[in-house]
Image 1 (cartoon, helix red, strand yellow):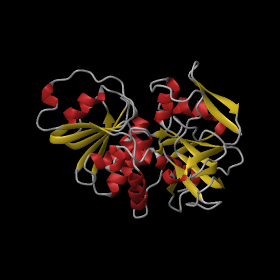
Image 2 (cartoon, rainbow, N blue to C red; image 1 turned 30 degrees about the horizontal axis):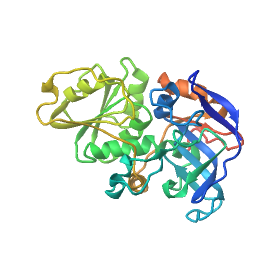
Image 3 (cartoon, rainbow, N blue to C red; image 1 turned 120 degrees about the vertical axis):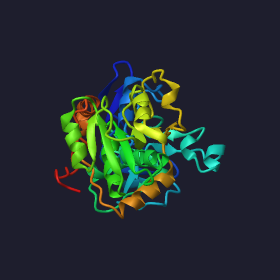
Image 4 (cartoon, one colour; image 1 turned 90 degrees about the vertical axis):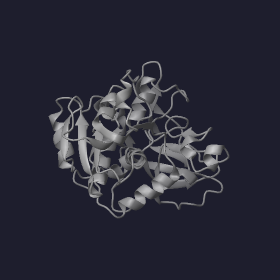
Length: 340
């Protein structure tokens, strides 16, 4: 099969030919229909995250159809469409797993990092950690829901869910464009912060329901109840703390961020909270997709062929993608631009 693998020396993606994986016990073999490009993939490619698997195939926003099953795999049927997220496996026995926090598992396996992911024509996945996908959303538009959507949803919940009235979104990429729609549908007022001078990104945020959109160097028109940071820029933390009222929350949604600069304690004082998000749980997936059944939400995607994975990564890195970039293997039907 064709796959795009990490060259750890050059920090680029290379086309490779690999054997179609054989599903182990409890695993399903999927033909990949679409795989989203997540900023975590960039961190793996660039070496921001320590390498776990030499020559790994990235990708953890995978939509695929079941074409094979390993011994004991009975959850899904052949031909069924399923999603594969970042959390590919948890040990199930550590204290975190036992207390409902499998996202903090002491011995996890992450898709596209510890085990090969979806920048390929086929992928094997533990069926226990695959997600049932809602109907009515084509493959390419469903793919970003599996990380940008799930991590965005977990970040939003840790920031208070629908309770905060005024929320800020810092970095208006794949996750924020989903959270903006989710929050707006809940009646929240959204304030979007983009790169300075990014008028197109700000217009995109307003199109999706943002009350206000401006540069990250601008102050919002009012104090916010919560701020969610999706850009991997540590310098945004003091700015986000300055944007929230006393008792407000700042939640960092990324797996990696540049170093935080020192800042005055008074920015944190006033019982403001600063916390991070780590990974996701299967319960996050169930709750998120159940919510999507009750509310309209449309991902905006730019589709690339699987062989164009490096170009897709570069486009995400430079901020040239409004919404999410998605890889589609050759032979898979491309979505129409206006598909839901």
